[in-house]
Length: 175
Image 1 (cartoon, helix red, strand yellow):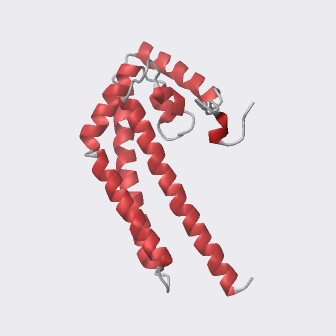
Image 2 (tube, rainbow, N blue to C red; image 1 turned 180 degrees about the vertical axis):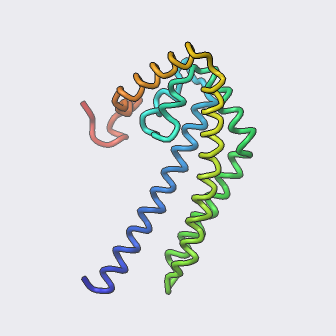
């Protein structure tokens, strides 16, 4: 393998890493939004619970009122979600600039990744604490029922996405 091939492979792996981190931000936003929303009589948290293995199944096993309470508590403890998204977006833009600059500055890129991961870790820690507190406050019977709902949620396969309207606008038709 030539040095140029190695550099190209490393660059692509970094691009994939940045893309993966971006997807994590999107998922975190979806889960947080789902915890706060009840739209058209459908509970959105249920739809994303299997796709997000961090809090999704745990949130999906709570009843809608508990999810809303957790979402509000998270918003109070984690700060402004819009500001967090803007901060993450700024970090991604800096990462893209570093990725496009020659010579590549690995330490600058690594520092930006650590900054981004620190923000994620802080929010994950808040979510972990709030979920554990919610469960701890349950009666033994309620906790047992919650465990049953969580078990069922983990056994169900993820739902296939549904498309509204013309399927031709969304790629190949699905069975």
